[in-house]
Amino acid sequence: TCVYSTMRTGVLRYFVRFRSTDSQSSNALLFSLRKKTGFPILKCKEALVKHGYDLKAAEKALYEKAKAEDWQRVQGRKTQHGLIGVLLRKNEAAMIEVNCETDFVARNTQFCSLVSAATQATLDLHQQQQESDQRSESDHPPSLWQRQLTAADITSLGPWSHYTTLNDMVTEKFGSLSENLAIARGCLMRAKEGLLCSYVYCNVDLPLPEPTITSDQTATTTSTTTNTSGHNNTTEHEVVAMGTYAALVHLLPKEGTDLDVEVAQKLGRAVGQHIVGLNPTSIYPRPRDESGEEPGDKGSALVEQALLIGDDSLTVGDVLEKNRMTVSSFMRYGLGETQDDC
Image (cartoon, rainbow, N blue to C red; front, top):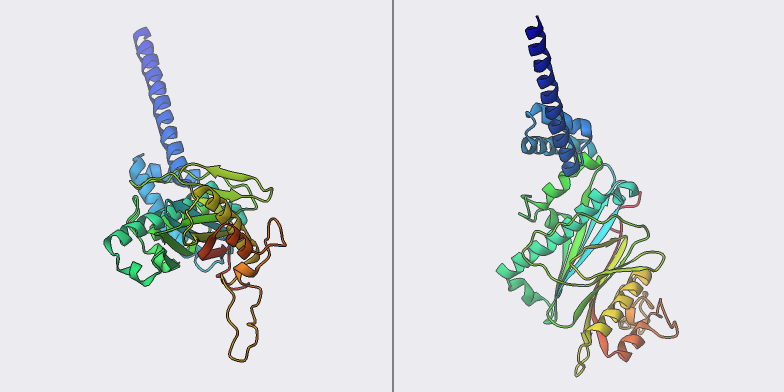
């Protein structure tokens, strides 16, 4: 009896230790899957149990389920919020608008990571496209190549990282964010001369997105985001600046003038801030019509507008002339501008 009791106690102790170790391992897998995908913990547990705690199989099943179920559930719901991402890389820039349903999700780390990855991927993939097809550059001025992108242009791009297309990147987030998400539009600039500058306005504090660099092309650049307090967050590494308004500006030195990069960067940022604030419709004023009447949009030309920040007795044109610079082109995005009024 004593021998039987001793053996039974030993077996029970081994079983308890085994179950404890097994439970700890299962919990580690569960929390790992939850952190990696962002899906609710109950969905993660269900996927792990169904696939025998195979982490990769469970992750794949979660994403496939999100595409099958959540895509149908959220389609048609309006996306009035979101962020605009801007990435400068040496002489190239991308600006992308990504929309969601609520401002709460727009401040979510996963959504910020989506905006960052989509912006970077768009620039990466178009760099590859331009390298393989140089014919498109002949349609633009010698100093600048630029292109407006539709939602279809962007979502059909790929492959990038482990995604077949960028549309897969968006649909992957449906299950974890439980909102309709959409890439609205984008644009690209590539300067052959002069300097590209950006300004991004953000009225809320955003979380830092997770690093998404997968391209072999990494470069040091400066990008500036300004919040409502006027604080500048400037970083000296590749970063996607995000906000609700943004502008890209291409500056050229006048003939016979050397480009002072530091001065041009400050000027480009100031001009970008002005463009975001006053929304000019052109760089130069339109000429009078045949009857000699002034155009209906008088005062909407960038060079004619009084400075938004600084000495308002000066126009943007005055400041550009003082610094012997010209604006070759600019693009301005405001969140939701492409959507119908509700």
